[in-house]
Length: 251
Image 1 (cartoon, one colour):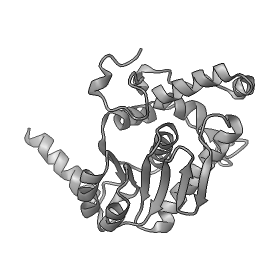
Image 2 (image 1 turned 90 degrees about the vertical axis):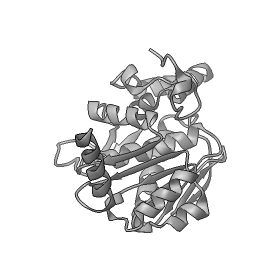
Image 3 (image 1 turned 60 degrees about the vertical axis):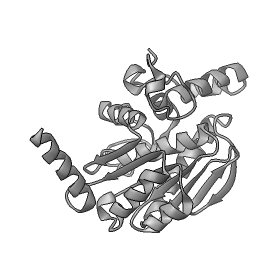
């Protein structure tokens, strides 16, 4: 079922008739044999591309392969695992689709970083002219997120080389595509937002960034999409979550 009033919802990539995650299939429908069958069929490829452009969740569970650092302890045969079709991740994807400004208080091991980074990657490859920024307290941490996305991109090119645009720049802090979109990794600081003027901002571990409040204010004006992920135990994330809780209790 498609959204009934797409003009009232923020379109994450290119389609006006977006399929929200809770309106789509929770489980993946494409497997390796399907990608092999599609490899030489431009008509089927166009259909899969159109589906990915309409449904962020379809893209995640069918086209994104992550790395599970605990694969051996879990008894898995390989660290490379498809994005898990879990209900809480589907719900988070829906909030990302609907909320242009979103902060996510989280605990460890919920895959929020994997999911949000992959969604910003999808935004970049399906919509031309995007500049999406990954920001962490340290530039090295932001580069680690970009490296994860680079891995997602490389594994997608193995499965479906016809789906993502060609890479035109591949460095430690920038991944750029032939559709004039790019992903960049930067350290904390409002000057990073000022100097880059990104389309989208993904700030990871927001509670650790001393300048998160200032970056947030600048991003409100500069970005059409902003997502902040972090523990709500302390720092800026705690203050935001606490004020939100106080406001709800007062109401």
